[in-house]
Each structure stands twice: as structure tokens, then as C-alpha cells.
Image (cartoon, rainbow, N blue to C red):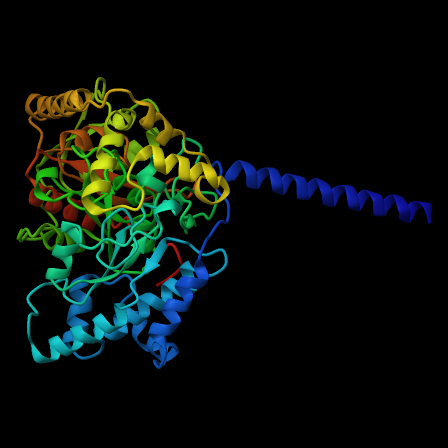
Length: 514
């Protein structure tokens, strides 16, 4: 009996050791602060169920989902043209995936709100298509998700702030208006790092008090979705919608695109309008598309910016191009080597270049103008909370709901005595000078770097940048190759990205075989 008791105690101790070890592993592996936090899921699910009512959604998914998952926009449009899919079915599949993958318990939580009229709009697109009226755009009838700092008429736009959750803009941001003009269906709004990442220094990327934590499907609670366009990237990598729109002040498109194994494109700042987008630094903020491939990014860019670029896609476009490879001490050297080899395999001549970012500040300058930019925006678009001080006070009254991780960034901005854009202008000029010098002195056609390593420079300068999937590292973390070119050369950049994409095939689907 005594022997059995000792065995029992030994097993019990072993069990607790294993449990403790598992807990410690979980705590170490999870990004700081990430938890399973998802708010208002029932509202979204109810909205989706109402819109899907009357459809045999199980049959649609079983028979038609194969025409949507991992497909290019042109493939989807060709399938619709052939009569094998409708815009109604396409939109229904997206809503079903949001319900079952995103809004379920321990789901991805990348979608913050759903357009309650999405299915009605899809049926209208089918009617227009059948009558062949106003079908003159590649994005016609395609569901698009928007980051929730982009004003959308008739839909809540909160920038992830619980205190602004009831704000419904009277008019669209220019980006949203252009997408609608070209026939896109605004499917809903994406979760994000609250206030585009400028709420709290301790909040994990992808968390907002309005919706909770965005989850990276490549490693839930272990691999960060990055930010601030977290939900925009996650929703595309999980095929909840074909494409989405993010915004970037300092790496906020290219970083989550890298983390999600998707394409992120921040266009030349002067080619896209930021009107109607809640600002961090109005002089720098830029919206851009997130997609599974470069071709789709080009389609969305044309629609959102009202541009009309027509790239001729050539797998060998990088042949004999001179690319400067910028790397830093903190980069994984093996990943830098993989990037270099991938560029060379595509035919590029690769030169290792020093690329200093000294003197270029973006994120640390946000506090200089945020108060004025926010209050100007609040006045123009009639936000329910008109001043930054009032927003902070409102958050403080219910911290559990409105400021779970605090609001020290907002408080810093509110305390800034003098609102000045001089330092921001200096950083913009410095960044442009550093990049222009690098291009000229090295005879470069483009500059490449890992993930968002050097994204502060093109973000500040307003140069275009494009992230293309580059597989995973040894720890299973998705990687991205980011390219930048001089201002205004967006079409050239997209063609470079396509060439790199076709040679590397680095896109990874996170949910098994599609």
C-alpha cells in the first residue's frame, strides 16, 4: 500500500511538472500580452445569419468554395463569366468563412463589423452583370474589407476605439468612394491595432478595445499578426475576402503582410487620397491594398486610387535589374541570404548596400501633431468625441471597456504643448534624400530588405513599397521580401514584385491545403 502511495505521489508530481512546463512554454511562446479576447461576436454572427437566410449555404460552400479560395480576382471573374459562380455566391462564401473561421470561439477575430447590406449589394451586382450595365472594372462585384480607420458611409468607423464604436460617417473616405464607384462590395471593416497602433505601449499588435485581439493563423497567440493593419492582412491570408485595404504610417501595411504571408502594397503617397482616414501623421499616412498576389494588389490600387496603370506581367522583369540589399545587425543572416539568393534566382544583380535610417523619425514623432490632426478630423467628420482630452477622459471612466492596456500614447500626445510639423517635415526630407542618394550612388533599380526592416524610410519619404511572401523561417514565422523604388514608379515596382513572386512562390496558405 505504501509503495502504491509513493507511485501515486510520483505520478501527481510529474503531472504538475508537465503542466507547469506547458504553462511556462505558453507564456514564453505567446507574444507579450496576447490573449483570446473577442468582443461582440454574437452581433456579427447574427448579421451574417440574417443575410444568409434562405440560401443553401452548405451546398454553396461545398460546390463553389473551390472557385474562390486562393484564386486571383481575374480567375474569379472568369468563373462568374462562365456561369459557374455568382457575386451572390461569392459574397455568401466570404460571409460564411468569416462566421466559421473568424467569429467562432478562438477564431481569428480579424473582422470588426459586417456591412448589413452586403448580400443585397451582391445580388444587385448580379442583376447589373446579367444586363451588362456598368461592368467596366476588374473589381466589379468583388468583396473588399477596409481597415476600420477608413470612413465608410452608413457603417461604424471606430479606429478600434470602444469610445467611438457608435460613430457612423455621413460620407465615404475617398478610398471607399472610389472602390464603390468601380463596383466593389464593401464587405465590412477590419480589426486593427487601436488608433493604428498609437493607443498603448503595452497593448499587443492587433488588439483593439472595440473588438479584441486579432489572431495570426500561422501560430495563434505564438506568432504576432503584427500591425497596425493586422485584421486586413489576416482576413486575406485566411481567404475571408479576396482583398482588403490597410493604411501605413510606419510599416503598418508591410509588417502585417510579411507576418501573414500576403502581398502588401503601400503606393506612392501622392497617388492615393487620405481624406476621410483617421490620421496619425496626416503628412505621412497612406492607404494601400493587401492581397494574396501582386496582380490583385494592382487591381485594387487602380480602383482605390482611380489610377489606370496596366502592367504587362513578365516573369523575367527582374532580369539584369540592379537591386540594393539593405540589412542590419538584428536581421537573421540566414534569412537575408535566402532573400539575396531569391533575387539572384530571378535574374537580378544584387549589391549589398548600407542604408542608414539615422535622423528619420516617424513613430516617435506622432505625438507632435496627433492632437491637432485628431481634432481637425473630429470637427470635419463630426466625431462624437471632439477633442483628444475628452477621449482620454471618456476612456478613463471605464478603463476595463475602453482602455484595457492603458492609453499612454494618447496621453503623451495630449500633453504635447506645441503642435509643430517641422520635425516631421525634416524626417520626410531626410528620408527622401537618403533613398535618392542610395539609388544614385549605386546605380540601383530598386532596394530590397527583409519584412519591414527599413520601411521607415519609404514610409516617411512617400516612396512606394511592396512586400511579397518569402516562405517561413526556421521557427515557422512567415517572412516577406520588401522592395522599394523612387517616388512615382509604382507600376515598375509592381512588375518587379510580380517577377519575384513568380520565381519564389513564397505564399503559404495557413489553414492546410486549400
